[in-house]
View 1 (cartoon, chains in turn orange, cyan):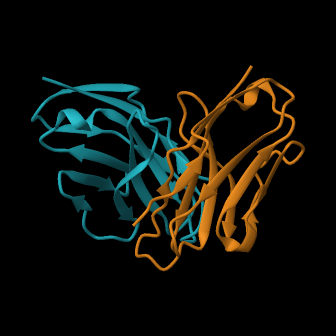
View 2 (cartoon, chains in turn brown, purple):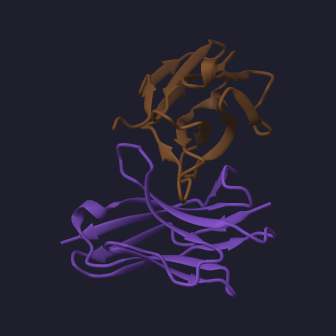
Amino acid sequence: EAGVVQSPRYKIIEKKQPVAFWCNPISGHNTLYWYRQNLGQGPELLIRYENEEAVDDSQLPKDRFSAERLKGVDSTLKIQPAELGDSAVYLCASSDLAASYNEQFFGPGTRLTVL
Amino acid sequence: AQKITQTQPGMFVQEKEAVTLDCTYDTSDPSYGLFWYKQPSSGEMIFLIYQGSYDQQNATEGRYSLNFQKARKSANLVISASQLGDSAMYFCAMRGYGTASKLTFGTGTRLQVTL
């Protein structure tokens, strides 16, 4: 079974440029999460989807960040415009509400560097 | 609100020895789950073990066991018979009430296994 797929793995952009990250969750997982992990820190949730609905986006900086999950499968996270402080690893995770622990499975992340 | 505290930024252990990684937590939720994840240099978060707040027994998964002391609000990870491949960052995380809730992570402990 394929894991969570993310692309690109690495992205370097100049500040004020837009950037987008893509995530394909594990097949059948109805819940999808985007986390941001700053250097030396644990991941912090940006947004959580249940199917197509964003059920928790309280930590998403909505002035510059947006996300969508079309058809309840793939998801895209966008930053426009990027700022220096956005440099981080962006992790996507998915889970199955019916699983016993509902543990979250993570992708390899996208490492963003804003110059 | 939940909080996870990992007070050991780095740990060293000799191969084949056991090591304990500390984790304390704070929450007002009556029901919660505790997780440990491993993050190797490749960046992917790998689920290791889960402990539910109402579980009577400490969780075990192969060489991993969780020393859960509810009254002390601690959930330490014990790795037995350390291997070189265990060298990685280890994160303790908590999920509050509601199985699809976000994970709150600690700052992690970097484990280095030596010969």
